Amino acid sequence: LHDCIQKTLNEWSSQINPDLVREFPDVLECTVSHAVEKINPDEREEMKVSAKLFIVESNSSSSTRSAVDMACSVLGVAQLDSVIIASPPIEDGVNLSLEHLQPYWEELENLVQSKKIVAIGTSDLDKTQLEQLYQWAQVKPNSNQVNLASCCVMPPDLTAFAKQFDIQLLTHNDPKELLSEASFQEALQESIPDIQAHEWVPLWLLRYSVIVKSRGIIKSKGYILQAKRRGS
Image (tube, rainbow, N blue to C red; front, side, top):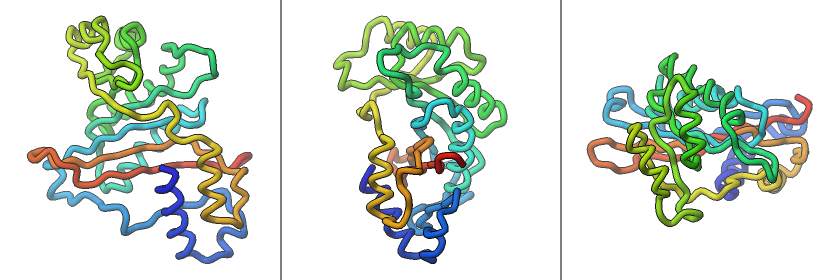
C-alpha cells in the first residue's frame, strides 16, 4: 500500500505545476486518470462492485459518506453493491463496543436508504459484538469478516449466530493497521519533498474491487484515500 501511494503521488506530482505544491493548498486531488477504469454503464449489471472502508482518523463518521460518494464518482456508478467497514480506531486497552460502531453504522444505513449501497457488513466482530449490532441496527449486517491470522477456525458461537440470522461469514488477512499516519507521511514526503508532510493526516482508506459476476474474476481493483491538512 505504501508503494501504491508513493507511485501515485510520484506520477501525479510529475504532471502538475510545481507552484501548486509550493503554495501548500488545503486540498490536493491526486488522481492518475489512466490508472482508474470507469465502469461501462452497459456492463454495470454484469459487475459486482465491492468495497472495504478503513477509518484511519477517529471521530470522523462523516468519512463514511465521503468515501462512498468518491468511490461512486471514481468508478462511474450510482451505487456500490456491498461495503464492509473495518473496526474503527480506538485507544489502546479499550475494547470495541457498540457505541464505537454506531455513528459509522448510522451513516452506512443512511447510504443504504438513499440507495448508494445495496448491502453492508462488518469486520472482526465477535459473536457478542455482532449480536449487539444486529439487535440495535435498522439495516442489519449481511456479512462479517473474520481474520484467520488470529483465528484458525471460525468460533462455533459466531458460526451459529451467523447461520441463525443469515449473516455471511467471510475471511480476510488485512493487518490491524492497514495505513498508519507515519507511513502515509513518509510516502508523501518521499514523493513530494516540497510539501510539509507532517501537516497531513489520512482520514480514511477505501479498497474497491470490480468483479465480473458470471465468471467470478476481478476486472479491476484499487484504493481511494482521503487525507486532510491539520487545522484545515
